[in-house]
Image 1 (tube, helix red, strand yellow):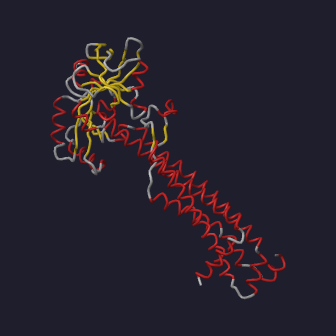
Image 2 (cartoon, rainbow, N blue to C red):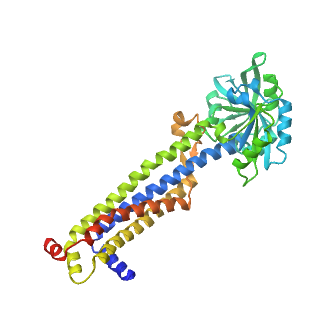
Image 3 (tube, rainbow, N blue to C red):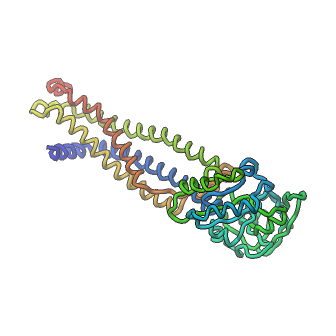
Length: 406
């Protein structure tokens, strides 16, 4: 019986090709929009977090509680605190730990000057935490005291090249101090937030600032290890050190929490709007089809077709249209997301808007079967709900009235 009704529904659909194609296009556009929206927002979050973790901050950091409130070099971790932290982390699944010192300053060349964040790193250990070494596009990675890595954009603004000298000015314990560096290499900045970060050996920063410790310990985890669980274990391990805290991704990027939460909330109106659009398109076309076929339904009722079966045929027609539209729209969305996942979307044009919140230059989309499941649930259920009223009208037709009015 169901197969027979499916055949009737299929035949009825293609008796009015333009109407059917319109319904398919409506559902396809809705499916395309929903899947693409999910894929882009998922990729946006994934690109932002991976950019910060892999190229900049590591999976989490350890710092003093005072530095968390006021990120000044004089709130750095002491040598004793660094020793205690590394010893207590011995049993954690850690891939690398690297010391860092950061301080704001001014970088001056023979032609220009610009504000900069100076970051002192341990060159060998930093390579275990981030992939900065892979970003060097000209020159070489840090090797000796006095070397500096500069983002290419900043180097162009200062008009300096590999091998040329620059002077950094920053505030040390004895007041403003200056230190000369040689540009050993240029890096392709992975995110807009790192465009103003200069990397130097940590010993040069310690000497210039007059401190022996570090403002942070950047920690990376082994592949497949849960950052959430490891951060919890790290906090338990440091429970006896009240002056030290573990900062996870959201502690290091407080705006990201609101951005991710906000983007999820903001998706809801778009999904509702797209669902209403698809539902209205199906409902409008299905109702018009009902009005156009009133006489036909009346004749079918008069020759013995029961009302429930007619209603099922109408719902089946909407189901078939919704399924075809979903396949077409979902397939187009898959191709689009694969393209954005491979080539990405360049956000450099929005530098002034997103440059300070750690968003990468290029955002890559993600694909997940759950995107299609969500789209299927939203679009198909909306289409069926939209077809409910025409089906209800069909189930209440009086044969004589339908034949006369049709």
